[in-house]
Length: 144
View 1 (cartoon, rainbow, N blue to C red):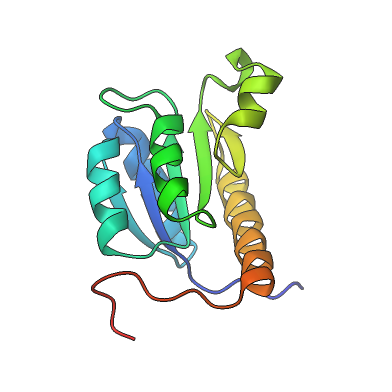
View 2 (cartoon, rainbow, N blue to C red):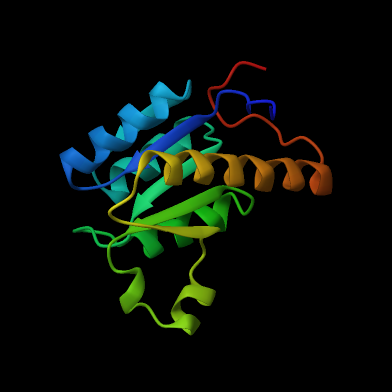
């Protein structure tokens, strides 16, 4: 049996409370620590204060779209793993998907296994990034 991955610190950003809560339930059930944000500005504030292993963000949100949020985050933290969770994946062109500053897309509606697989995939991306660049310094307000 494959060894389970360590617990991840995950931020879920979605304007729909039911989706946020469903993702939190699935992710915490799998042993992860999960924080929630209801929009892009709230997510940016949390990212400025804490380090997250993975960020799951909705694509279509008021105030700031998920790809704009990802752009802001990647500008400051280029190795941050960002997973887009959207019901609109089939409406995005191949070129749009390639130019989005995200690591991969999960399509809504999702099931438990899809989210578990996404966390494993994100963990592997983080592992590869650490090998490539070495350990990153802690973000502000994080004890060393």
